[in-house]
Amino acid sequence: MTSPERQKVIDVMRATQSRSRRHLSLLAFAAGLALNVPTAHARFEPDTAVEGNERTQSSYIRNLIHECLGEQGAATLAAIDVPALEQCVIDSELFSAVTATVDTAVRVVVEERWTLIPVPFFQSQQDSRRVGLFLIESNLLGRGKLLVAGATFGNRGDSFLLVLKDPSIAFSDWAARMVLRRGDEDLFRYNEDEKVEGFQQKETVVRVQPGYRWTPYLELGWFGEYVDRSYGDTDSFTTELEGTSYWNTGPALEYDQTRYRFYFKEGHQARVRIGRQFARRGGGVSATAYELDYDWQFPLWGDNVLKFNLASAGSSSSDSRDSFKVGGDGPLRGVERSGLWARHVAGVSVDYQFPLWQGRFGTWAAGPFACYARYLPPEGGTWQSSRALGAGLFLYLKKIALPGIGVAAGYNPDFSERFVDVQVGFGF
Image (tube, rainbow, N blue to C red):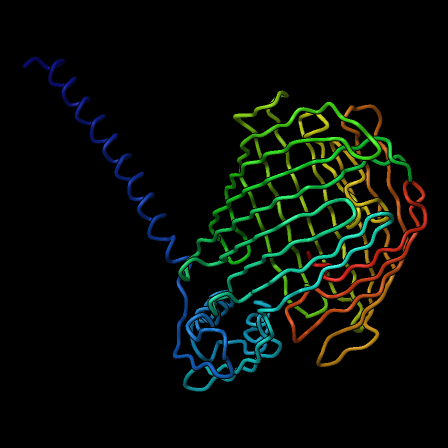
């Protein structure tokens, strides 16, 4: 073999060794990431005794305690922050009181809230009235799973709802949600306080959303849903809209870094969902849409609370069948329920609430609110506004895992002007 040939072989061998080292480095890096995944969720799991629970499984409470210790980063009994542990267990919203002690082990005594309860629902907004009943179990099987089943009946139509949520499948970081909804409702679009368009909509929605808890506060998921809608005339309007159905799927993000204080949730909470339609029938172009909701609540002096809400939604479609039909709460108080139809909408609301009375049963709170929103109609044109000022009185129940009661009165110069909203079960 000549010298040039020998040198060529040596160069090839060196190049091969270099590529091998790079591949081994990449494999080692990937292996390190894989090994670090369980390490990120490794928890300190000391001996734990649970008392006071009758409906909640002890294994579920122990797992919850160990997750709380993991959030603290505690690695020894002496490093446990007892008040933070008690608050973390209360954040599950299953207990009205938690007492923890630490010596040679962790001992936790809980006082359970009532969770399996029938919840009456009543809502009165302008010319819309709804009544209903929901069965809510926020501690299904004693393992913190949520079941909601119920129906509402009103002067505009009826609706039926079933929700299942498992925030920790088999004590893992995987979660799942399922929603079944069917409704038959007269929908009206409002210009100020007058109806300008309307139709009867029959809707069926089936949604499934698996997710993975990437951090103690952040869940990344992917949703898929099937939507079927048909349309008919109302007493006031006729329509030529063709029925439509489609599949919709996309990413979903949920961030929850809150502390449960019984009459408010201190901290940040956000939900984002982006969906793309496909296999659409009934005409129209498959649309892409997003929804965003952000809450920030924090205490001020004394027990007073400031609540900030930001909500936004948008669609690539100008089809009125795809428009967001919103109103009645959040930044759109003073707007008839489902009375604002928009292709894009964004708004903020600020609530200042102060407790009037606090006891073992719950908390009565009152305070003013201010809302502002901007929206673009489905057909385009110019952006328009909705503004509202008012005050409300609210009851937050402590012993019962029930949303509560709310009465709000205010003024919206862009829609209904003076308005009064009364709602039982306002958390839904």
